[in-house]
Amino acid sequence: MNAEARDYWQRAQKAIQTASTLADVDPDAAASRAYYAAFYGVSALFANEGRSFQKHAALEAAVHRDLVRSGRWSAELGAGFSWLVTMRSTADYGGGTHASAADATMAVNKAGDILDAVRQAFAEAPPD
Image 1 (spheres, helix red, strand yellow):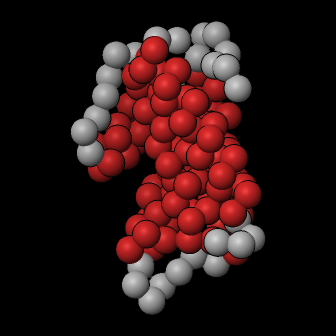
Image 2 (cartoon, rainbow, N blue to C red):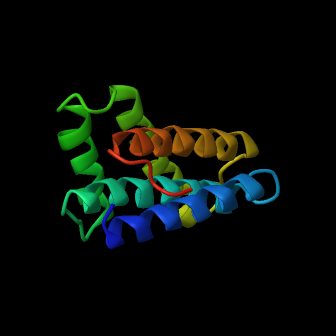
């Protein structure tokens, strides 16, 4: 794993831990951190392949184009990533709309599934 990928992976691990801790007490923050766990995890995967993205939408498009459509990931994982994108938008910018505790728990679970898929994609297991 290259240095950039390792840094993203470490960020992903911290974000998922934070999301898990906050799920019951601050669902908006937990949902946002769960998205970032997935974001950093996928960024680690692509960084290890020498690729990076400047925009969140470009990363989401790459998930569907390069991971789901290519058969590396299931459609369910791709849909989970997109759901996290939407949930992050609600959690961070929703105005009067907020993530519920159930949403936060689901976000943590979906992010965990994505991190598991990233972990499996590495030839050598990334550090925990």
